[in-house]
Image 1: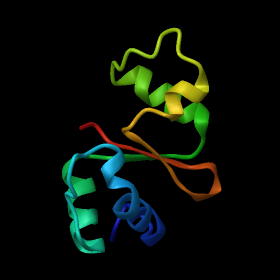
Image 2: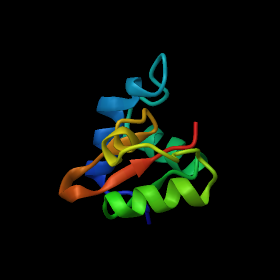
Image 3: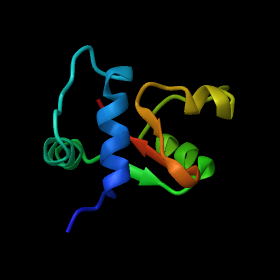
Length: 87
């Protein structure tokens, strides 16, 4: 079973060029495989995004929440959730 909702995969497909110079996936199946391979995570809210990035060693010190959420590896999903890739 997929760890990602179909809507998450669709959002990534539509917005993948915010992080990559060219598409890395052309279908939902390719997007799911790519995200699993990258160990992308879905955070439930902004606070979890900040905690996750801090835990994995991303230097976010001094950044506002808006600046953190505007990072290219952070993809806004529905319901206030976020997809984060380590590119």
